[in-house]
Image 1 (tube, rainbow, N blue to C red):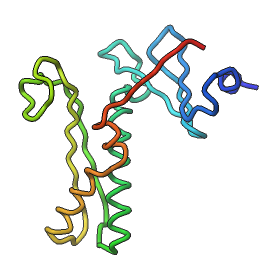
Image 2 (cartoon, one colour):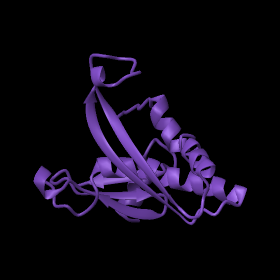
Image 3 (cartoon, helix red, strand yellow):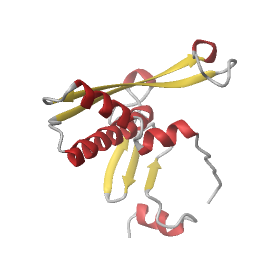
Length: 154
């Protein structure tokens, strides 16, 4: 039995969907998401070894992938000629007073900018509808609703 399996068996969370293990000596992390091995690290400029995407890169990948899947699924259901989806994302910190419509005006907020590109002979109406559907991506909705994260020691 390998160390990851032992850690899973000892966990109080039954069958976690993601397991992350680090040595504590570097930023490099081994990740198992379901049956898929991944890694994470920080870039050289931040003291890492650059062996994988940063945690924020991984965070951006989730709504990016979900957005592409969601608009693709919608276009397939409608038999629209969507030939490809490109989602570009960037994470920044902004001051709340620069954020129109934000609830708080005194804090620094996280902002994700998301640019979508649709390939194929779509009408302007279809493109607009796909942009609207992108707002319904489940991961996007989860991030917008706020997340309660609970932590404890094993």
